[in-house]
Length: 87
Image 1: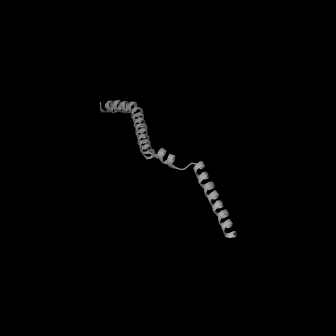
Image 2 (image 1 turned 90 degrees about the vertical axis):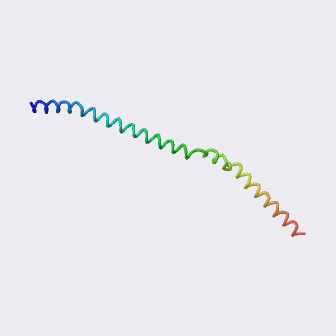
């Protein structure tokens, strides 16, 4: 009688083992998805306002305009100073 019970329990356990493994895999996948969602939420929080910071940076044309204007002013002042000192 005890042997029959043990045999039945072993059969039940043999049928349950694959289902338990499947449940563990699904649980692991869900926790991975939750972790990814948490990471994405943190990343979104860090990126808020980044577009306005990038937009506030000077463009290439702004920098080139400043450089050429400075060169032109410097050249003009140098030419003026040379003309004044020559006479």
